[in-house]
Structure formats: C-alpha cells, structure tokens
Image (cartoon, rainbow, N blue to C red; front, side, top):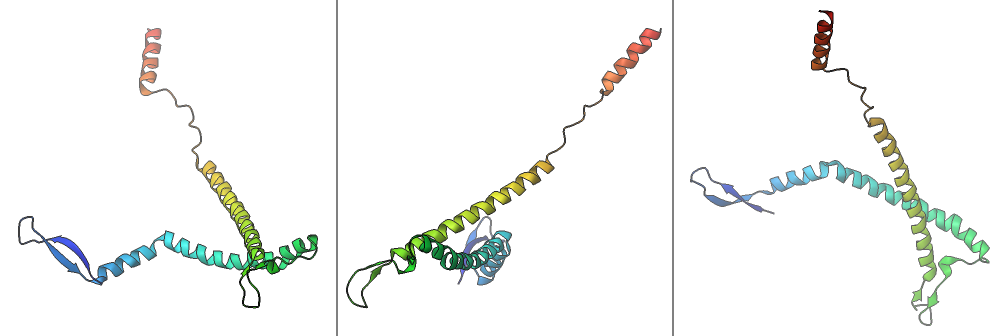
Length: 157
C-alpha cells in the first residue's frame, strides 16, 4: 500500500509535488496507535469481558435457571420454543433461549453498574483528598505594616 502526501520541494519557490511514501510511515502510525494506552485498555477489557461472559453464562445456566425452573414447576427455559413446521428439520422459534439471554444481560448489566458505581466512589474519594486545604488567613501586607510603624512613630513623638 502506498500513501500519497504533498511535500514541499526545496528546489522551487512554494512548489509542491505529489510524493509516494512507502508503507513504512503507515506501519509506524499503526505502531503508535497500538502503543496508546486506550487501545491496550480496550483489549484488556474485551478479554476480561469474554471471560466474564463465560462465568455469567454458567451462573445463569447452572444456578439461576434451575432455581427459576423449580419455582415454575420444573420448566426448562432452553427447551421452550414453538415449532415452525413438522418433522425433525423444522425450524424452532426458541423464545426460551431468548429468556436465558435476557437473564444473562440483566446480570451482566447489574454487575457493570456495581463496578462503575465502585469506580466512581473511588474517584470521588481521590478527588476529595486532592482538593486544596482552605488557605490560612494571610497576615498584613507590607504597606499595612509600614503604615502601622508610621502611626506608632507618630504616636511616640
């Protein structure tokens, strides 16, 4: 890939030419982009999110759905659906899987809410510590001291 940029030539007054810059500059820009902290933070967040999704899916499938099924008379959400045809090859409108996905979403949203709330509380506590202490009352200025000395000298004479 080549990238075209305008470069000013030294040999002429205010003349520009179309110059082809090799992919080296683009590779350097890509390296700079990847090295930024935001990209690394995002990558870590995606990896943690994927691992967290597996945990929440297990929580919902293995713990919450059986408890809900127990209260609803042994209903298995994953088996809920409406057949859209006859036979084994017929499509299924699997609303039970949607219910499970909705429960997963609500749990993840609740945990993210709690995390954001905790982070905001820590930020607020750090901001309170950083606030400057109220300034102590300043003493008299040099002019006020000189005026006081002048007045006391006048009073003595």
